[in-house]
Length: 438
Ligand SMILES: [Zn+2]
Image (cartoon, rainbow, N blue to C red; front, side, top):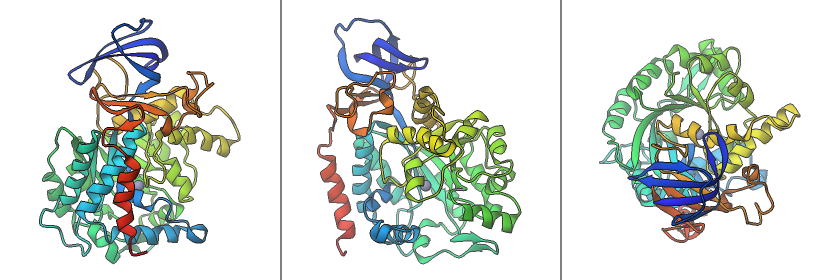
């Protein structure tokens, strides 16, 4: 394939009249200042494929359903547990196929699924103990995006100053019971062309310290993600029970490192920032979820200044729009510091492209020779983007402005439509039956 872009975001910034060639799924030539010839012409501004580094896909069914009576944390959790208690493998497949198609429409080419909905609602493993993970793999394969399944170790119900709590009945389907059974189930997951396998620690609330190192060992060189310090209560319980912050506990247990990613890192304290930087641990911030849940604003600029690689995730999928996540990274920092211009545009683009690819253990996220041919074309003539300067358009654009999405040379989205058809209908058909008794 050979495409032409009037504007494209290349590793050293915005370029004009770019010819992009692909062979066997990878970029084989990228040249600037080229007059269009026998190229396929791409709309507007072309950027690398976007990586959604943190998703819990089943939460997509909660969108617009957790804010009755204004919506507290508890109304959210009650609805989440109701959903988690009922969804079966077929329903998960239908929901994931629709939500991953929604992600593709937003320009997402690779996604990290932080997967803990493992077993049957009673907590008994299914006959095929990886049937839920396989449902996610099949969904991603049908949609055409690359899935990084971050299979999550989840053993305890919570953490207080007195120690770990037993699992709530709903949480039983998240847990393998012990770390060895988690490890043997993960080892049975086979990577495929559409899916690679990584590991996750739900949090220091759900995995006691004596098991943290074992999870890191199973992860090996594969991506290892974990929620950390999303809310202050976690820090308080951890400091009271262990005498250290959650980040320090993870460092002391061998969890931090260059293939590790801390998700949220909202309430860092003490030496947490330098612990993350010194170990080359990445941080995934999820601004639309953190604002929805009232978590707070994380120290994104301070982390970047310390040399931490940032990436972004849609997390509970209340919004699926990485352009909005990138914009929120800057805008939240403005609100917190009362200053404009906290991040360079290039830093924001790196967070949703190459930074996310790296955190998910994938090559790419850049339009350069040898990288996977993943790209996104964003229209500059829509109601949202008309009149913008191409160099700043990404601060105005949204998921609805995505025109074309290509993964390893294959076109998933063309003219703003997915080849599966009406994604709104797929979402409704997957979600409505889950709430039919309400
Ligand atoms: Zn999460």
